[in-house]
Image (cartoon, one colour):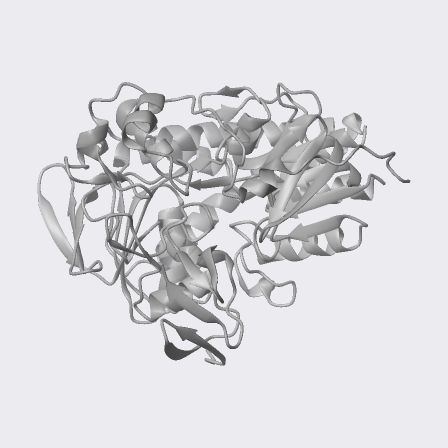
Length: 80
Length: 428
């Protein structure tokens, strides 16, 4: 797989495969997508836009369902 | 406001088939889907150019090509959030709101995995079975990852085979249904040779992984993420080290939109007649909404709904034998993968049941209904709107008939309060 798409994840520069979702990038980088209301780290559960566990801030927009968002060059992703 | 003869919600196989045949018959059709591209779950991330190398890829190529040749308007990345007036569907994408006027509606919203709470199920690395599959289709690299798959349903073997094919180390596949239930289901497969061959292929692809029936997850553990999983067969327990756990208990239909529109449900599915029409005039439901049966069921039901919308009932009737066969298959599938009562005891007092509001089992146990649980604990009032914990509490506590309210998906308040545009004559 060619890691061709540069993104920034919690300030860290990464290259992810072209066409990868932001959720897939976050799992591969071992970064939680969000912290729960009691402070637990969470990652994707359903992978299809239902469970809302993979919410993160993408290019300044909060609560994006990262499993439904494809990485674009220069995208900035921050754990919520 | 845009006006259509038919609006189809959901661009999986059922929705694609319905939209295609309705548009081929000359109707003005809009196909709406909240993913980046059509295909739903089974055809997720398929591209017409490269799909032939995947199982089911040929069907996707054929239906994509047929859909492409029609004048059907395909809206990707949009979700239906409300039904603000009769004959109007409100849709939203990234804060933008539109109203679609329709004469008929065909709902093909599919299914999601049923998740049940167990200690450790909220750890990062613990995902659904279909969840792992969807993420891998979305670019997650499984090479060298040790994956345990557990829960229930035909998805376990299919996902195990797909992961093994992509270089994951499948560390074990654990099906909660007892061998006896599966054996009783086996003759059904003889009537569906395609499915039998598919299942055999999946098992061959996963031969290096232990596959056990009558076994289920007890807990997942690890520091900040899943590192190991403990399983049981009801007599003894054992532990398997892993990087990811995929655990899901068969599927549950996405009933939010049909319930909002008032469609009657029976035994957890939308009740439909032979033409896929629901209890609400002008609203048809197809695919997993009417029974979990998979690709072929969705395709035949979608075609029937699309033909019926076009007034071609006689053609639709020709598909009735196939439709009945697929519906019987769905009923037998439900019986074969019925959940065992032991699974109700997996969640401990401090195990979270509602992952959005972090509500533990102990706070829910004294409640007597879904409504009471919402009022007292905020269970089901978080971002997923009960999509995960609703199905879990239905199984754990028997709470049913969750009413559906707009917005069907989280949306800005402004999206709901926007006035519906005055109806216009549909321009022909």
